[in-house]
Image (cartoon, rainbow, N blue to C red):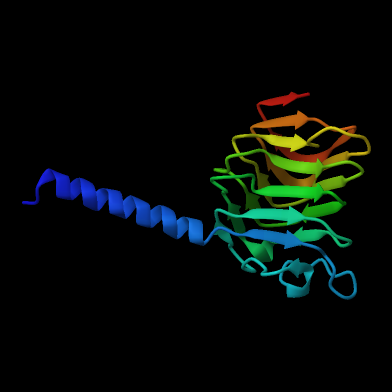
Length: 193
């Protein structure tokens, strides 16, 4: 039988190793949508600045920034994507420029992230999240339509078809916020300003 202090030391080393391992795998993915032909395919490497996330079932303590000329389309081919960022937010759509994300299948989840997801961030920026099929599951910290002060921010959330949006709260902090409910299922506990 090992002394109690040795067991505590082994537990501490195991915890530190697990934390370091998780931190090494955290990444920020930047969608720029600049592939030739206005391609919106998640799997097209030239749509990403730097390394692209896995084509299917991507998971980790990651952040996704969506900006660019072509919309990012998350389809059933991507399966279940979980970016649970333990130290930051997991998704920012339209930050400092315009960005659009369309969820047409599969599911994209930020549940477990520390900070709110953002749709539209910064002056004269437009952020758009369209969910027509599949699901968006937001972080427990909530989803913010717009962040920061200043003019010209436009945030749009559209739910249609069989799409599902599950957000703990929807915070409206923008010059213009559009919430279009054209079908689908919206689950939230609060909408505030």
